[in-house]
Image 1 (spheres, rainbow, N blue to C red):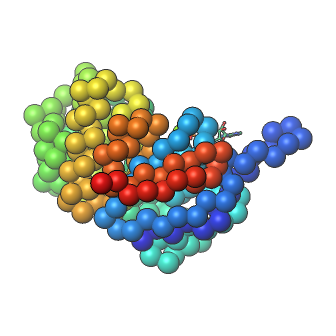
Image 2 (tube, protein in one colour):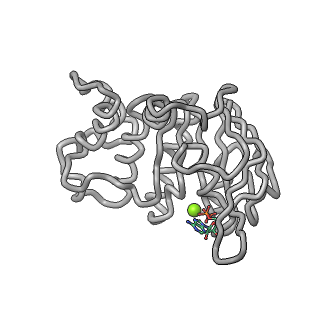
Length: 224
Ligand code: ADP
Ligand code: MG
């Protein structure tokens, strides 16, 4: 379980303090599919990045199974980013000149698994329907396909949590639907999915919608 308590993030701009997060409390149980929604600038990415240790709060704590993630030593941080969470970003961030296969293998190599990773990589690529594109260079794929490769890369280490920040933000409707279907399938397989989106239709596909405004949670509801 992820527990967020009293989270704030302050930016000092000139003479004034600006709070990107101003006191966020929430719990995310294992197996949930949570959409974090709200207007641009409401603090969604900041919250997700702090949960993923890509950013640090000004105050407050995030615990995973009771462990304060800010207290992790460097090795534990690396393991957390590599194996506990899998990230998917709006802009995919693939290595364009690498093959699809090599892109998906990267987290395994970073985790020190340099042996034969074929089964894991093929399973991840099949999960996103791209087994047949394994040998293609990432840059030759469409945006929708690139995002699916990014999802394969995020799941190849079998993480507990999928953290997705506007995963459909650069995609057309058809490709968005494909990506949303994959996230729903991962949720059905037992993964905990935390997805930032400003799209109400995508948010409605989650099992819980958390709405942010001005760095605060203003609504938290289960969907049907
Ligand atoms: P969202 O993802 O909901 O669009 P963000 O979490 O990215 O919002 O940002 C929340 C607020 O924090 C925004 O108003 C943004 O401009 C501000 N912010 C983010 N990073 C910085 C920074 N490095 N310096 C100053 N303000 C920032
Ligand atoms: Mg954002």
